Image 1: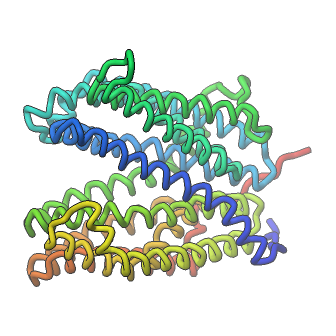
Image 2 (image 1 turned 45 degrees about the vertical axis):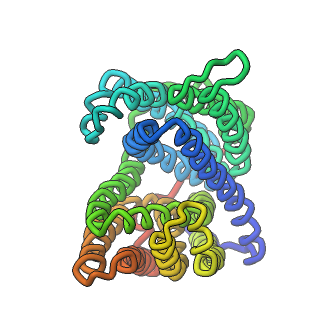
Image 3 (image 1 turned 60 degrees about the vertical axis):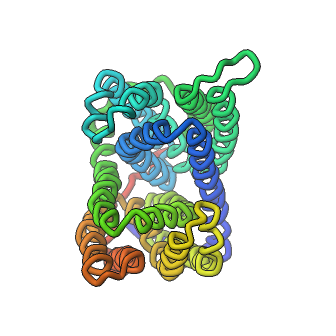
Length: 456
């Protein structure tokens, strides 16, 4: 098949990237702010309630990894077939993705309701936390179908090049969530204070509204509009979605397990050091919004170009997405370096902890451009249906380089928080180099399959 060459100017490409990336960045920002507000409200109830939410979120992180993997597959495959002009196939994949998300969401809901206690005990929950944790977990996780559908419906719209709609829905439901949080947790007029259960109900209602909102937009979308004719279960498409998404889910799970491994080492450095590490991570999370925003744009646009058999265009979109991400995240790194110590005072007044947070963020400032390469190139690999290589790279990076680095630099050489964050930087540098090397040699394209054009 003859390769098409892109005729777009760099300025046009950059404009397209920004139109997709910025809404995704804003969406990530609002989701992060919601997390902060949610934690703030629950913290007013007490440490037991905070612990209950924390352990529930640790389990839900596994759920999210699986639901997100279906979303990644939907995004890539829809974008690729639309790029090839095959709208009917894109519609078919959209429906099959929704069908799979519904089945998996119901399955996880069943598990959450009937196995809440053993799952929480497996996490080592203390006795005084167990009862509220079970109640919160069952309310939030039993309707897992809402979580899975939100991931997939939003991903289908992004695959269609629409990141604005998921952003709008995210803003609306986050604002609604904050309002419901306050009303249900603390009570308002005739509504009684429900405490922790109120926080759970607020979360579920917000997610339900999100599913309704995304469905409304999807029904109206002409390119991937919902159609009863496509609801029949199709094994071949389902298998394609699962095989593409499974390594992406694996990468997320590898990261979570890796965190458990090196968190244990950091805890050995002392309570102040672990607290400083956690707070520095909470501040750094804002940089991930930028990286994931450009990664989202790269995944969609590169998928569309590969679907159109425009390899030149795909690489130009990938290169300019990476360059844009590096510039933005480098600027954020400068802000971290200058204002890291000031930001730490919002979380603690402990002078020792503040100094450690400042040290961690100043080291992290130099990691930002490298992290941009890792996040955006991962999105590019996903666009080429190559989800395994990022998973392998992440496994080696976190389980070997980061974990060993934290022990050797942080504990053995007694560098403390500096050693921890240098190890994080070395992990990201390793992943960036390997992802870039195989990208430059076009090895990232080894799983990319040509898409048949739709016949008129």
